[in-house]
Length: 146
Image 1: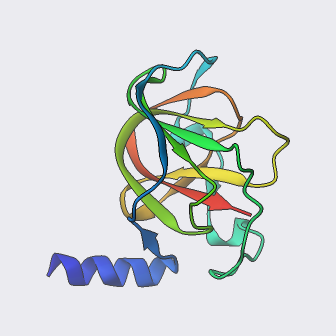
Image 2: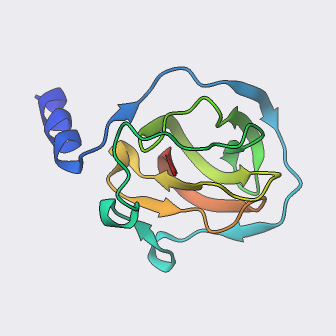
């Protein structure tokens, strides 16, 4: 019954969920970045209408050096660093629960990155690159937006 309800939820949201393997660059890494809080109530929530009309089969120009840190502790401690170059565009990529994150991008931006609640019911745009955001464990996934 739960699986059926989850399928209906995904269909209504109009986006697919990706749970395949991601290219991990490092595990249990601590980052030395400026730290900020990312409170869902205080930031821009991404919806389908704010995605610029991106279709599910669109391709993005994801910078080869772009990464996301998914961290088990606040202030970007105990992080897994994932390469975004192989990640699908406009799909919810499930990575498990995390309490802090950073969008690491050494080049000028060519795409946006959101973090999402479980089943991607709500997405929040990461407002800055190369900043660690504490997110209080409410997030489980990310979405790349071209």
